[in-house]
Amino acid sequence: MRKVVEDKRLRVTVPLHDELTIATLNTIVTDVAEFEGMTKEEVYDLLR
Image (cartoon, rainbow, N blue to C red):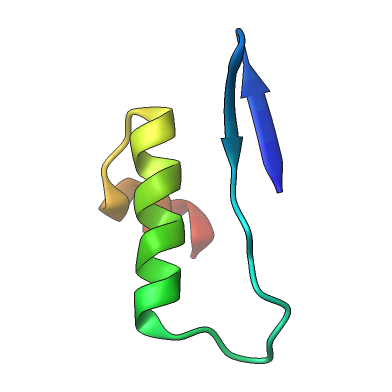
């Protein structure tokens, strides 16, 4: 997955598994939150 915003890029690799470990999910959410200037809780709320 990739997002480009004004010359800034975020590449996130999401493993193609039936289940993700808590650590993998936490890393993905942390990366997205930092890129978007959000808290992890805000990202989790968007996923619900």
